[in-house]
Length: 185
Image (cartoon, rainbow, N blue to C red; front, side, top):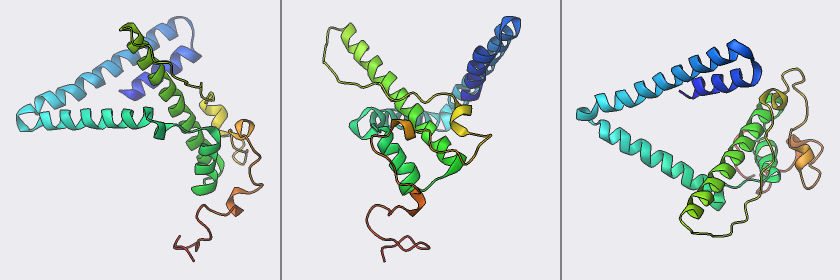
């Protein structure tokens, strides 16, 4: 289902004319059929415990969104860079993909928080919230650097302080660690 929606977005951004219209309709139809099959499988197995699956998915989705909009779900560019490049030590295209995904999640978090705020305001509940607009993730192809894999992090222009020259040689959080085991030495 998500792939169909992603293809629809791609077609809307890259095509024009009849190709755009028919392509977006076809991708929307595929996404709709996928959603119908997904829900149909749960309903079809209702007597065999499909209701448990429905409850499990509902709890999973609500918990994930609750964690995302909670203060623990906030990540600024410095935190993303520190986690991806220094702690996990991802480099190259893989590090850029993870950074891009993190920025996309922060953008989604912002949209959910703003939507929640608008929903409350429609009932007259006005709570001033300081929600900062996150850094734009940009285009996937720009972030991945497929043509230049050793390109630096996409977060470098957004960092508040200059990162170490080589994040792989930076000391991990918590002191020295033994390389093969990861245990403190």
